[in-house]
Structures are given as C-alpha cells and as structure tokens.
Image (cartoon, rainbow, N blue to C red; front, side, top):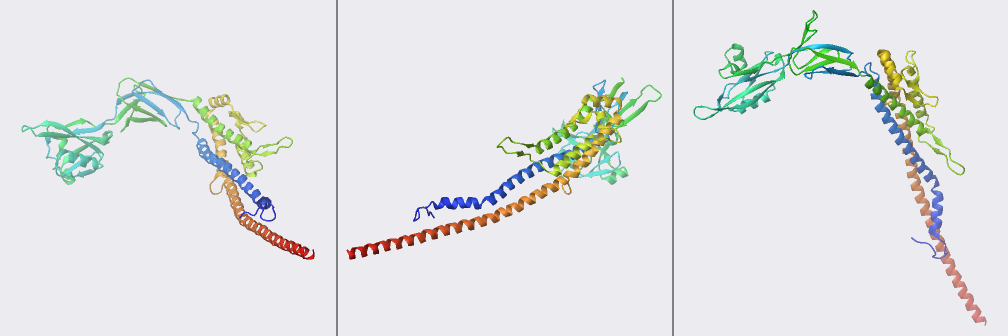
Length: 453
C-alpha cells in the first residue's frame, strides 16, 4: 500500500525504510557474525582434513622401515629382483636349474557324443572332484570342469574326423597353478571308482599325452661351493632373503648375479617430502593467524585463525614434535630444524650424510619424530575426541544459535514494519479528517461573512 503524498505529502515509504534500517542493525550484526563464523568453520574443517591425512602419513613414517628404499639389479634379463621394506644390502649369484610349469594333459580324440557320464579330477593332494556334464558333447564336459572350481581349466581342441567323416575332438586340461602340487588326472568314473582302481585315466589312454608335467622352480645359491643349496617354489618367484625375491623365466647353467643396494637418494626424498608437508602446514597456520594492520583511516584485517587458541596450541604442538630431541638426539643432526622465526626446513645433504654414516640411527630418529607427529595430529583431528574437532563443533553450535536469533529478529522486524505502516496510515486518515473539518469550517465562515455583508 503506497502512503506517500495522500494528505501529508510526507515520503512515508522512505521514512519507514529508514526506521526499519535502524531497527535491523542488531540483525545485521548477527548476520555478519554468522558469515565470519562460517568462514572460520570452513577453514578449520579444511585444516582438520589436512591433519587427518597427515595422521596416516605420520603412521607410515613412524614405522621402523619407513625409509626403506633399495635398487635391485640382475646380470641377466631372465632373472629379476625385487626388494621390499625389510630388505638389506645384499649380493649373490644364483643358478636357475628349472622354471615352474603348470601340469597339462590332452585326452585322446573321441566322437562328439562320447563325453557324457560322470568324471573325476584327482589332484596331487588326493582330494577328488566329481564332475557330471549336462550333455554328452566335449564342450559340455569342458564347461562343467571350468565351473567345478577344481583348479583346472579345460579347452576343447578339434581333432579332425573319423573314418565316417564325423568330427573328433580332444580336451586339453591345464592346472591353474604352476608347481608339482598342481599335478592332476582326469578319470572317467566316480570318486569311488578312482579309489577302487576301476576308473579310466583319460590321460593314460592311447592317443592321450601329458603335455607338460607340473614342476617347481628350482635355483641354487652358492653353486660350486661347500655351502651350495637349492631353493624351490611352486611359482617362478623365490625368496632368497628377507624382503628379497627373485623371479626366473628361463633355466640356464650360468650363474646370475643379483644385487640389492640402498637407494640413498630415494630415502632422502621420502624424508624430505614428509618434512615439507609439515612445514607447509605450519606456514598455512601462520598465514591464517596474521593480522594486517591498516594505515590511517584503514581497518585492521584479521586472519581466519587470529586469536584462535586451539589452532595456536596445535601449531606449538606440531613444532615441538619436530624440534625436540628424541632420546637425547636432536633432529638437527639429520637436517631437520626450525629457525628462530618458526620456519621448518630440511637439509637434504645433511640427512643423506647421516643416513650414510648410521642408517639405523637415522631411521630410529626419523621414526621417533614421526611417531610424535602422529600423536599430535591424532589428538587434534580425532573425529570423536579431537581438540580441533571439538572446536569446529563449538563454532557450528554457535552458528545455529545465531541463526535462531536471526529468525526471531525477522519476526520482530515484520511486526515493527506492520506497526509503522499502521501508524502512518492512521496519521494520514486523521490528517484527512482534519483537512475535511478545516474545509467545512472554512466554508461555514465564508457563509457567515456573506450573510453579514
């Protein structure tokens, strides 16, 4: 309803708006506070996410083998070497006597309708698996074998035709695993028939053959010496030391030299990446805690973490975890230092030197620092009891309370606006009545003046 200029000529809408703006100042202050708190919450949540990510990395870094990194080489492409976290520097020669093979047999050729009935696969472990195909065709039997989970794969192979021109087929069966334990036999008959010796071994029939015998891989260490020993494996990968495996692809009589050496460059890079992540987190907290003082007539800008005691405490705990000695040994001895301005740095050259001089002690010190960092990050970021988590929850509860206050102010301001509009409307009505009365009186006075004259 437009009230402007009805009687009074006042700009009533502007007056009401100005009065409402004044009345809404408390709501505006609360809304601004919600915006500020929401920004803080977002930044705290982001910081907490980074901490939770750091917990997992610190846990890994705290392990006794976190810096384990090796280069593994072989003098022959037929032998490859891998070194795990528990490996140590190592060098030896091996002779590959045999590679692992999967047992494989092929049946004699038979007609396309002679594959029905009950069959049994007897493995090297003696556990028979009975198989009954759904039909009498070779593919029916192959499908049943493949679905039986007997550890054998069957494939139908064309075998020409018989004297009458009818197609013949064979079935080739191959163990799914290499090694001597993968040997098996396909019998026509039940498991009881196999046990009684009355079944027919299809791999032993005329026209059938063993394609390959299942065999273990076999290598010799220290060949030609009094310490010569053989190592075998059902697969082509054989362990030759703790955390050290060799994989062979071809047998040969010549010794193959395998070498495992520490990769100092990679070890240093691993430590440097972890320390730099801590340094970046400290810098992030520092930047978020700064207050920029404005010049004359300018406002002072506060950081998102300025004055936050929880974040300040977190920053101190992280710094202490990195710089304090571990069992009396300072982290600075391996190149991890914090300057008087609180800047964390990593000296890669010093770390590499310490690693070369005493790798065990360097690993122990690095793991100790990482373990303390894991404790700190867990203490603050735990999703149930973390100090930073509790801080975020507190801020979120405050925002909820503030939003409730805003809702109440919305109701109060609507009531205020309605009151003002009603007041000014009544003012116009009263002014209209007064104006009418004034006009009537004026006309009455004018009439009296006319009669008198």
